[in-house]
Image (cartoon, rainbow, N blue to C red; front, side, top):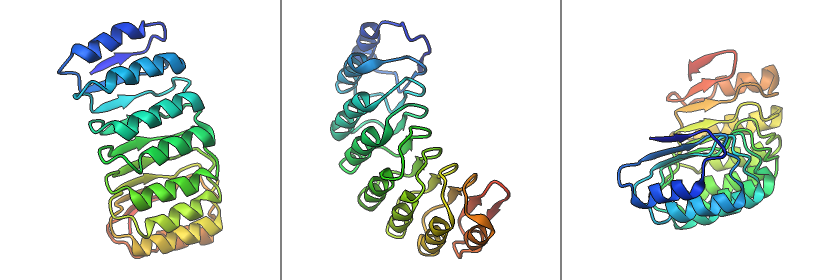
Length: 228
């Protein structure tokens, strides 16, 4: 694993490592302040690397333009299994591009989009992804203010048969979103872990969620963690 925390490390040197190293499977670029040009260099090198399976770009000030470059890479890459872009600033535009790219990607299994200011409209794009993608098994979309966008996502869970773990905590999901999620969980037999903590379901919404019929699911609501 290669781990870089210093934002001033030269990207050209890392590019050479990616071109020449046949053993590097995991790469962490944490708090690196990458910028568009460095992102282009990074993914240009990764596009010629057939070894790296896990990439973390956590806290790297990734915005819409950088998100577009990541999306382009995901459309052509067949090696990457895990991608962490948490605690960045993709917002709705960048998030939509990245998620849309995954509709064409059949290798990524684990995606972390925690805290990217995605907003409610991205819920529909997540729903489209879950309806089309059959590879993704773990999705963290917590702390993104999905709110009403959670309804479309819940509807998609009725159809998805590959996702095993979903983190939706801290998304301002209310009673209506809770009802839709409860309905989806009665139909979905694949999901085994769901984090819905720190939302706004109220006692009625939580009761419905905690009493749905999926016996394989471990539900974390912030108050209890139980097998339903």
